[in-house]
Image 1 (cartoon, rainbow, N blue to C red):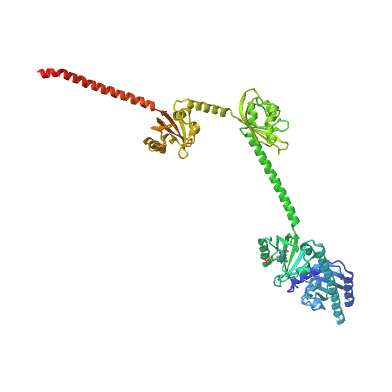
Image 2: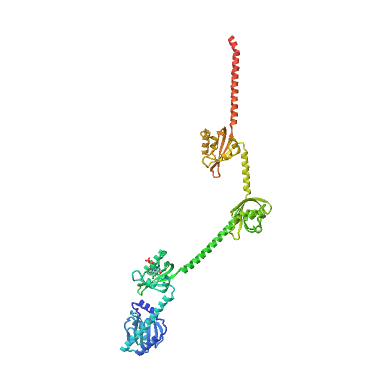
Length: 589
Ligand SMILES: Cc1cc2nc3c(=O)[nH]c(=O)nc-3n(C[C@H](O)[C@H](O)[C@H](O)COP(=O)(O)O)c2cc1C
C-alpha cells in the first residue's frame, strides 16, 4: 500500500526533529520497555518505530536488529494516520491493506501487527510502539491496555529527553553564546521582546526585566542610520532575514556598532510566529577594519608621497637652473642637478666631491661662513647675491644665486638655486648703452605711459630737462601738459589728442612754457609704441626747441622783405628819376 502522509506531516517532522530522538544512543529504560511489550503481548518481536519523511527508524528492538527501513509499505506508517488509536492487524495475509506487502508475502512473513502511536502532548504521532508475530493472533484487553501504557512510558521518556535538550539549548544560548540573542512575538502588536539572553544583557547593559515587552528599537539613537533602519523595517514586513550593522546605544548612553541579524520563525504551516535577533558587537571588527583601512590609506599616502618626492626630484634634476644641495656642516655638495653638472662640466661622481669654493670665483670658507651667518641666525630666509662660476675647464660665467638654509631637513642642508646671468647681463649692458645714447641726443626725449589717464611721463632725458628747466624727478609722473600751462586749448594740443585717439604719429609745434615761465617753441614728434600683443603702451616724444630757428627764419624773412621793398623802392626811384629826367624834355617838347 502506498504511503499517504498525514495532513500535519511537516509539523510532525518538525516535532521529530525537535525531540532529537532519531539518532539517540541506546537507552536501557527504552530497551526494558520494548522488552516488556514483547513479554506482555507474548510476541517474538517488539520495537519502537519512528517515522521519518522516507524511513522508519527501528529503535530498540526485540527479535530483530535496530535498522532503518523504507517507510513505504510499513505497518507503522498506517498506524500513525490515526494517532489516538491502536492499529491491530490480526492476519495481514487476509487484510486488504497489507496482504500484498512484501513483508507479508515474503520474509519475515509477518502475520500479526499491533502498533500504538507514540503521540506528543499536542497530538502529533512520532512513530509507534509495536509488537509483531509470524502467526495470526489477537491481543487481549489487558495486553492492549498494557501496550497503551507502555507507549505512554516511551513518550514520557522522549519528553524528558526533549526537556533536557531544551535545557541544554537554553544553557548554550544563555551561557555559551557570546552574541546577544533576542526573540520577539510577531503575533503581538508592536512585536514585543519575549526573550533575551545573558550576552544581550552584557552587551547592552539592560536587564531582561527592563526590555521584555518592548520593541527592540529602543536601542537606537541619534546616529542610527535611517537607511539601515528602513532596511530592517522592510525585511521584517516581508518576513525575510536581514543583516545590518547599525549604531545602537547601551543603557549608559555609550554607542556601539551592532551587527544585527533578524530572522523570521515560521510554524510548520508557514505562519509567522516570532523573530529571532542576533546582536553582535561589531566595534572590534569595525575597529580592525578601520585600522586596516587606515593602514592601507597610510600605505597609499606613503606611496603618493614617494611618487611626489620622485616627481619633485625629477623636476629638480630637469630644472634649467643649477640646483645644489650642500651638507650644512661640511658644505660638501650632496647633490648637483644636471644643469649644474653640465654648466660646470663635471660628471655626477665628480660633482659629489665638490666644495662650493671649487667652482665659485673668489669664494673662501671664511666668506661662505659670512654668507650663511644671517641664514643660520634666522635673520634672512634667503641670501641673494651675484657671483661668478668657474667651469672645470677654467672658463667663467656670471650667476645669480639664491641660498637657503633648510634646518628641518635631516641632516640640515643649504640649497643654492643658481641662474646663469650671462644673457641678462648682456641685455642690461645693451639697455645701458641705449640709455646713454638717448641721454646724449641733442633733442629732448620723453616717454609717456599710454595705459594711464593723463599719460604721465615715465622717462625724460637730460636734454629735455635742460630745454624745460625741470629736473627729471620733477617731471616723472607729471602729464606732458606741464609744458603747456594755461595753453590747453592750443590747436596743436587738439591735434595731438586726435592722433593719440587714433594711435597715430603726429608732429606739431607747441608754444611751450619752461619752469621759469619763459616761452619756447617746442616742435614735438609723438609716436605710439605697441607691445607684442599690439596693445598701445607708450608714446615716445621727440622735443626740439625751435625758438631760435624760427626767430632766425623770421629775421631773415624780414630782411628779405626789406630788401625786396628796398629793391622795389629802388626800382620805383629809378623809374621816378628817369621820369624826372625826362620831364624837361617833355616839358620842352
Ligand atoms: C528580533 C528583532 C531584534 C531586533 N534587534 C534590534 C537591535 O538590536 N537593534 C536595533 O536597532 N533594532 C533592532 N530591531 C529592529 C527594530 O525593532 C525595528 O524593527 C526597526 O527599527 C525598524 O522598524 P521601525 O522603523 O518601526 O523602527 C530588531 C527587530 C527584531 C524583530
